[in-house]
Image (cartoon, rainbow over all chains, first blue to last red; front, side):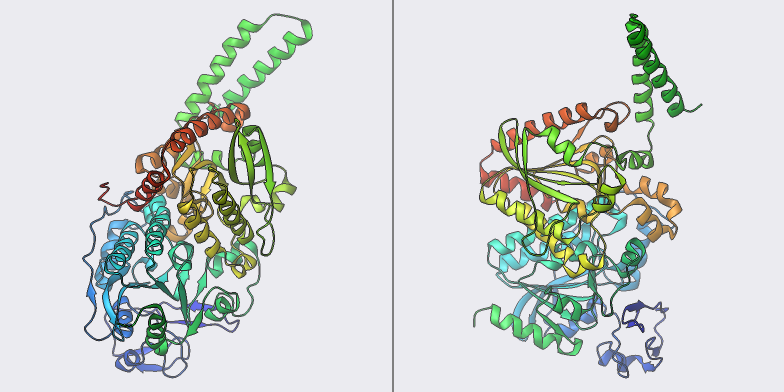
Length: 281
Length: 315
């Protein structure tokens, strides 16, 4: 799904049918037909108008780390569908579909990697997987990644792309917010640096926990950063949203992030941040 | 006539008898006692037959014991602290120092307001960024003074507004959770009414979490879940069943540690009884937690949250 801004400078999500992958993709922002391979080479940014498309966790990892250096951490075993949740579709079925569509076991992919030669533990969330939402599985992967960073003495890097807590796991999702902050506290006590990269979207329970308490926070240009989504705010309060509300620039101007960086420069920026946080080897 | 209507009729009859007895100097105590027993039985039956959605309605009642009147009844004395020391104050989330049966504590609580004017001011208990930055500040003061921290939760959720976002409400909630996990003294949360999402969990990262029998604790309101997943808020009742948000369901999931019983018709029918039940439970838990050395307290706190919902819960 690509994202773009409308005339009032807000983000709009556009539904695009994904499988089977067509050779050409239309940018819903400017209407340009883009050869898929060209879009991929441009890190899923429209070469004509600069609109950002969602990046899969796999593509995000590839865009940030040294080639061939990523090794996934073993995925943990957790109880699936702890509430036996069912809406129009059962949660088990939603999970199965998300796995088939993304090739991921959960909405976050975690492993060890090198960023311009600096070893890190990296966790990357994927919005395609049930909105990148955090339930028990995502919480557990994040905690184990932080614990691995602690054991290895490597910085922890998290790329957020999440709508928030996973509704289908109810209060257990809400309590993942406490769980990941508990693991983050252990990192802090050991003096291990934690860098967060906020992308589209960084909202809800993920932003109101692990996403907001890094030692250094970078926003990708094109990010959406906020507790409540724009629609919820408009519907609940009737307030008109100011231009540029909840953009990366808004977050920078309101003191929430340390830098705003275009996608193409993110790897370099991350390496620069890491280089001042780790000792020379 | 349904059960609620029958209850109302019985209650009116009992009131009438009491009035007659008083006005005419009659001894009707036997008749009144029979009626009161019937009322209690009926209330209990209503209680037991409540659906999750029915409990959501009870939890949201504006006359539910909570807020400042509850704190004043619960504690021997209370001194309020105001303001976040950055931009402002928030009437929806309040706190300060208190004495509870002679013991010094710090307390934080949501204020929903009883009158329409109070409710409007307190945005029905939806605290904004200032509220959570103030809560974090009070937590830090309490940490400095090594005071046990008691939080009383009753909120539909944190306030979704433009100013709240501009003042980093997400960061404030995260900071509260982090601060509470580090607190160098016992922490105890009691969910009195609605435990709504991030606005509730910000005050609930406690050593122990207690909940009143008809209170709820949920990641999202049933209406919110219904509009996201069913694309129609009319499915709220169905969502309430799926979310497992009632006290007994939360206890089974390990999300809360104890359920505090309510009066047969709900906590709002017995303010003083609710105060005493909560005070008894709070004092018991605080005294158990206070007996633990700090490193053990922190170890148990970490363990309580690290394994929430995970298969491996080993020590």
